[in-house]
Image (cartoon, rainbow, N blue to C red):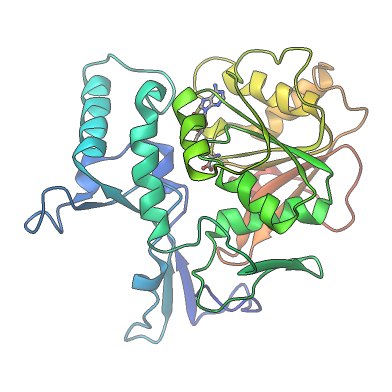
Amino acid sequence: MGPPKNAPRGDASIRVEGDPFALEQRPLPLRAVRMRAALISPFALTARCHGTPSSVSAARRPNRDGVERINYNSVMVLNGETLRYHLINRLKRWAGMRDGDDWDWRRYNIHYRGELKGIEKEHTLNIRGSDFAFEDGELRKKNPAAPDLHPNHRLLYETILQLRPASVLELGCGGGDHLSNLSVLRPQLKLFGRDLLEDQLAFLKERHPSLSADLAQFDCTLPFPIDSPSVDVAYTQAVLMHIQVGNGHRVALANLFRSASKQVVLMEAWTRHDFMGDIRRLHELKIIPWKEIFFHYRESPELRKPHLMVVSSSRLEAYPALADYKALAP
Ligand SMILES: C[S@@+](CC[C@H](N)C(=O)[O-])C[C@H]1O[C@@H](n2cnc3c(N)ncnc32)[C@H](O)[C@@H]1O
């Protein structure tokens, strides 16, 4: 699955459609709920919505015009509980009772479980054994029967492994799949995870009971305490984009840069904040303690566009410099 790695960017026979973050950018639009399976079971609704999952296989049939379309829009599995969560969230917004972050974090785990179930229909969420390996600087699938990794996750892991850190911190680690996958791909990596929600951390322990990692609850919109982790690389995946109140995401950025000595890797929806402008400003204000700061990006071969930001305390020859933020957020 996934387009050929060497497919030229402008290959007219393949059209990449959709955005794996498109629907993460706002809570579930009700019109997007498809009651496809409702006649069979009211608890088996499928929603075309929300960020991370994708429906690649369904969309990879060549059309009559000979153009193969690869759709990275999202599919999420809804049950009665997740549907109720989204209805209440939407009603509260309509009633003007919510104008905060994208999600009602107190009950977010309900949504998150449904989202992961959706992703799992198409992608490998938890790398098992030797299904994938990091070889010659690339993250490769070794078992053809294993579903592909989600393009966001594949690019994130590959980049982190290329940077060769001894230790990593994931802020907003959620169910812990990324920490777990990194530990499968590089067992000697020292892992740290922080998340706002106790129930997300409990879910992580449920999913990964034997994961060896330093995990703790922390609200990253507060300044980190002095005994917070010091790591080579700190990263987020779909976290800062959802933090929309006040300076919350800027404090979170400051925390990342205070924890990491070498690089901060961000996989976020780039239009939700001016991430590059905010990081520059924090550096100018000496809130980011690095002497110098270099912006780079990596392109997603699946999506064929710049998709991930690497901010480094030294220049990285292997990655293109991010001179203009528009490359990520056109
Ligand atoms: C969209 S989920 C992404 C989780 C994980 N990174 C992943 O890709 O599966 C966002 C996560 O950020 C966490 N989060 C939200 N606000 C936070 C905050 N202020 N401090 C720490 N974590 C936060 C949520 O609890 C949730 O686990």
